[in-house]
Image (cartoon, rainbow, N blue to C red):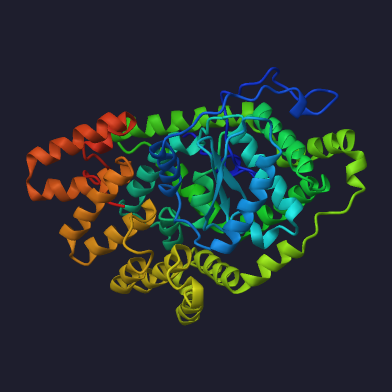
Length: 489
């Protein structure tokens, strides 16, 4: 049995823009002098609207949606604009998009989008620390690093492995079963965005980010301060979900067990899953740099190149403190929602559903009444209470009819199907599939519905489309699982 090293995959890293294909004059930070003076900045590329949209939807396919807190997003955009203003000539523009997620970190797309988690305004203490986080991510945009997600290869296997186990009749604990259904929670959201970071590329983003933030007038100590608070936030986040992390690891490891000689297709899938995990583990071993090591390196670089600046005062933080204070209630509602999602990882017998419902009502009060993050938490409470109709209505209240984040749309479809509203659920998933360029989850939902309907032509279309896009899933695309059929989300 191959062991899925989730501890390694869920390594404590806060800055999360993954990169490859870096274009530099050299592949290391110079031993003397500033990095910004030695790099070759790639020519600015103007991305089409559709390319930028695609970059955004790739994140929405792995998240539970944007955090529509305009004040905080505009403030972060102002910090980013200061960074861009001092970047080398020809530097591209970029925009901040705030994502609802309580895990520390951010994510950048070279198309000019920096995805900042809302929790940054909860654990960061100053604009200087925010400036380093933003400057680091913008450095990936500036250098046109190509994001490469570890889980982009592994995620289809993980989804299917979890479904197989959930659909298997055995004596798994309720917690173990729920651990496999966590997709869309803060834990899986953060880890699905976890990148395959490369030592040299992350080092460039750290050092170039420091150069840019200091050039923009920020205190270099903000970089060290960032690593300090991000480490604390990461440890707290990890501790909150440790039980579920352990259960999820056991849950997925169990899927490597052979399922019997009579199920060759499933055994083939399990073998491919094991190989994928092995590949990722080797990749991590070759490329992963510990966050503490990066913090030490950036501290040494700052002492070497910016010692005079370290004696200057921090950027006046009245603006930072003011924007956090103005949005205190909104952030509090998000904090409550995060705690609800964390609580729901426990056994039903340990949950006080009345208290959870009261908290959920607080989370969706005031300005956060229709926010994806808070409504998602309320929907999860309703689902665990067995009230699927109210769970679906909570999701319906998100946004203004636009396509929601993929996990949210799929959860609504799952709920509607359970309520007997199969056709509306199917039609919505087809719309969502077109929007997100036919993710695996859409095939997995639609195939059993079409198969049951007897529409052979459409069934074949889905099979061909699924196998073409996801050749590693050909067994499951063909409807094979431990239960003899494709299991729905």
